View 1 (cartoon, rainbow, N blue to C red):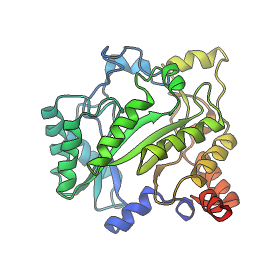
View 2: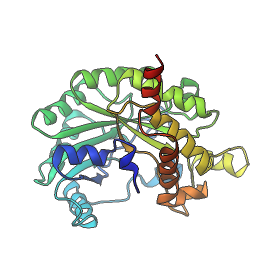
View 3: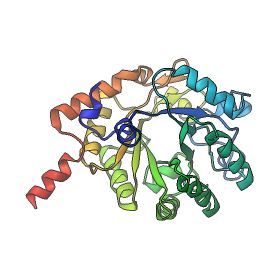
View 4: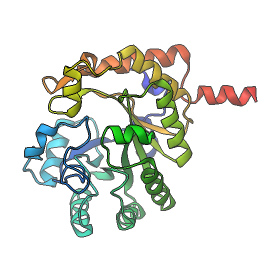
Length: 308
């Protein structure tokens, strides 16, 4: 698709580090979320599929069985893998439970990395030390933080249950211990426009970050936003608008920041809108075309330096 020509992608990073592109094998370790179990709230984030709350997990497979299944799906594409604890808040449990589950994943001889997805307000010092201990043993460790927006007004509006200050605190503690952080940002959240996306990017860069994941807001069945969308109270980004904003963000990002993802898609009938998010390549093609026409990662920063 050509994204590697313009962006420092996670695939390029892995190839430089390990000699090949690593595949992430996703794991559902039966964690939940404080915004789902009543600790912070029961409604969840407004973009989440609330209908799934009644049956939290779609698998009864063990962690090892999930790794085996994932390996079969990507057979022949890689010889080394990253265990990706993706579902829900994967640091939200007792220390001994977390250690047991992480240990089970990395004992697989083909696993060379550990990626843990979580919320900024659910990462204790003990969790950071646990992740650092794996890194000290040579495991490639990434802490993925779902920030979504650096704007507190937006975080409250979408019922995240945390603020930007929580994110800054966790990033500071994690990176001080040498843990790499990948931050998730959603473009198209209610009340936000192009400048808000750039503001969130700048706030994340100022706090310190190693990687980014960018996602378009899409409406899924069972979410609070689905009700607003059906009542014509949601304005969603077109693929052209999304590609423009992502391109501008990438050009304002230093070249050493790794982009783990620049778009996302969902399958119908779970996906309600926008329709372009139902296809894997729509967003990516538009982004690559924008980068080809206007410049690669960090190009705006280079231009500013030349002017100064």
